[in-house]
Length: 162
Image 1 (cartoon, rainbow, N blue to C red):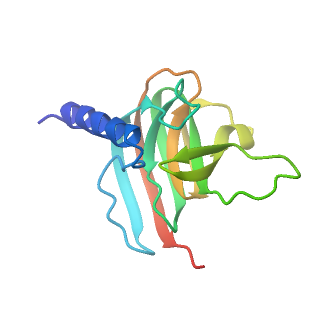
Image 2: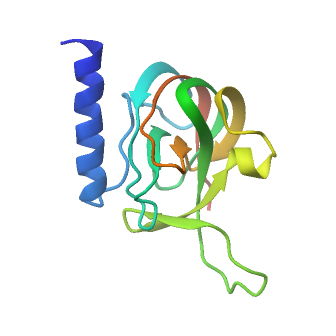
């Protein structure tokens, strides 16, 4: 089976999982324990963003959310079109007396969404290296154009303490 066929199968599987509201699955086998380093190099194709209200966007999940887990690391990528790096943060709603944050639901859990290029004044680009810390991480477009990206992720998975 060619790499192209494996990537296509993964995209169909990822879309099915998202549609079933089970949550995101990783783009590769991420078998890490607390404190383990995750070092992966892969090429991914985007899918339609399954978060409600984001159907006109495209996304490629690089590190999936897992209850009580955060990732800290660096991602370097090159993409077929300009993309944003998006970091998700487990979100506990509070009375929003000072406004609210951008939130999306993955499965049945809310996540605050950081679009790194917007918040850091970094122009949306075809390639970059970005440091991140969060519950999940992805590449994303607002314009709905599908994309392919080659990515290197170097991160540490940590379990949150209560």
